[in-house]
Image (tube, rainbow, N blue to C red; front, side):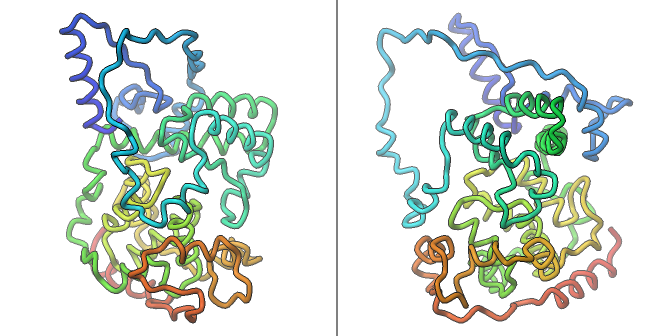
Amino acid sequence: MIPTSQERDAAVKAALLELGVEAQSFKGHLLFEPWTVQTKVGGFFKVYTPMWNSVRGRDVPAPLPEPAIVTAPEAFPASDNLADWRLGRQMQRGGAIVAGYARVGAAKAMARLEEFTNGGLRDYRANRDIPGEDGTSKLAENLALGEITPAQCWHVGQAELERGNPGAETFLKELVWREFAYHLLHHTPQILNQNWKPAWDAFPWSEDSNSRNFTAWKMGQTGLEFIDAAMRELYVTGTMHNRGRMIVASYLTKHLMTHWRLGQAWFEDCLIDWDPASNAMGWQWAAGSGPDAAPYFRVFNPESQIEKFDADRRYRRTWIAEGQQAPPDTALQFYAASPVSWNLSPKTPYPQPIVTAKEGREIALSYYQSRAF
């Protein structure tokens, strides 16, 4: 549903039509085509909650059944051996580790949805904010790859809502949050690589991808436990808890005064659930430059956030090896997956903060208060 994909599909359909082949499109990546969702005055939604209120009662057609028969051609076109493409070569030694956390394919996606429905969904509203809890569906990976459709998830969520499952409405809202990202991408495609609010174009973010601060952030070596645990989780599993995504993005763009595009690009490199619309909107939301954004003066405190959402230190113990006599495999896998050039070891003392929570907040606010946003 990004602009280039629409242009591609239109060209393919036109070419097939010229050959006398009928081509039909079926929406599967979204619940609602972006151009079918409008405000009362006919515009597009720029804030999430009104959009949710607009679509929450809409009918979502049931998913079509799987084809009973797929007719094969007399001869398939010649094809490359997929292994020859070496698609994972850039992951190097980290590839095998990340692969151990992925649940690939439609069957596993449906199994994941069923497990979540019968388990974590009931307490989803509260537990989805606790990074040490297995409290989310983890379906973003499968949605991004088209292994499950939002309509399949929606109908399961609606059935649970009717049964009185207390987490169902929150789950449905999260599906529409994803829709909101594509709604904005359709109407304002510049959100992918430009500040959604042009006033932020003059903001003095660093765009130095080799800076000490940005490098430490990527490596999970900032000296702030929430940031480092989340960044290491990303490198080991290819995913990151949503609370962590908000905190690391806020820290990079506000405490470290680094442009959101650098963080966006790093997530694109590392996430196995990478989604162009959600990634762009999420980064701009955290930075303050996007739609429906938190007020610019809201600067998440990674120290108070980790104490609030990881009071039992489970998340930190899972991903930070330093200081533990017997670190778990999850924490040690970070060193096995990370590049040799990073020269990291669990025996190295945990780093001092490159920018403390208090210092970073003061730096960010000093820039905000000297400019009008």
